[in-house]
Length: 116
Image 1: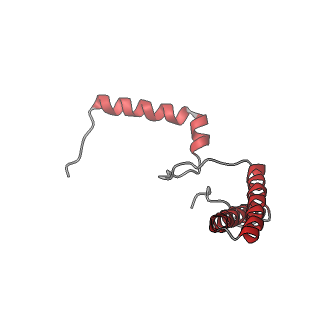
Image 2 (image 1 turned 90 degrees about the horizontal axis):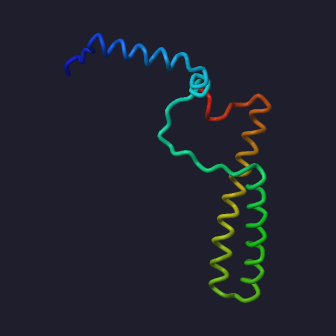
Image 3 (image 1 turned 135 degrees about the vertical axis):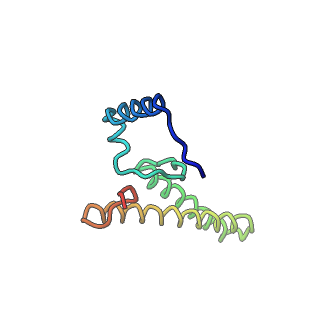
């Protein structure tokens, strides 16, 4: 592959762009310690939304359990099984988030946002 050389004009324009970027302190603050990521940002639930969702889903799961036991209807049994799996996954996510938050506060390993 051949070396691509920039003309004097292109080098001057590139130097001006780099100087403008270095002068932008807000950009420098936002980019400090970040690595490019190919992952799409996930929508974030607020701190209380995850607990509220777990409580509501747990209540729905309990109601489905009672109805499934009382009627022995296959649809209710499958509905309970699906709701139970989703409830467990949501609770697991809450526990992981809680332990990470408390591990960071106790001097444990930092979140994934630290430079490596």
